[in-house]
Length: 198
Image (cartoon, rainbow, N blue to C red; front, side, top):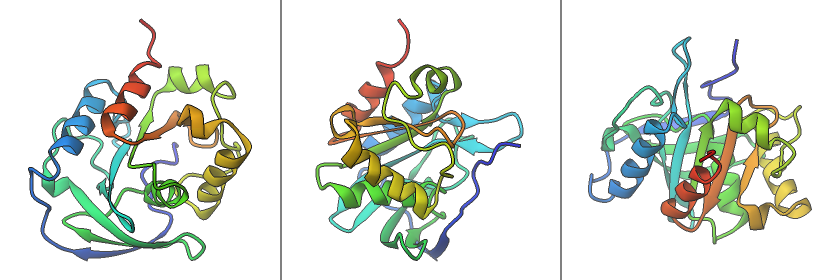
């Protein structure tokens, strides 16, 4: 069984109202675009995959909620704010109508690494994952998603590979998993789209 959709960190979720639809418009637009490309979706067993986030302040970001991959269209009720995290303690705090994605610690690690990173999209695509494994910067196959080890692996690749230039990586230990990041969602979405064959 695919190891998907399970939150592996301590998620301190504070239920709160959704953010305004206008404030989330760009995030929703790009997330739903990723769904139409099958970059975000649901496996036959019903487990959702893929997530998207955008930096909000120096110490917070907005991310899609856990298990929202099956939705063709999302609304503000499907996003939450991560406003505190501790990678070494394997925990984070989020506030909003849903719990944060199971990949939130990985997003947090990238945002923590560089202030230039303002947007992150995590997709699943079997063919691209196989094609670009060890062609693009690739995480160690023994490192599981959503853990402090994966956060450390992000930092290792930022230092030991050309990931800061490529801005896209393959998660060898997270089947089909690919992460891209950049300054805007448009830049990140375009980077992922360019991987597709013509």
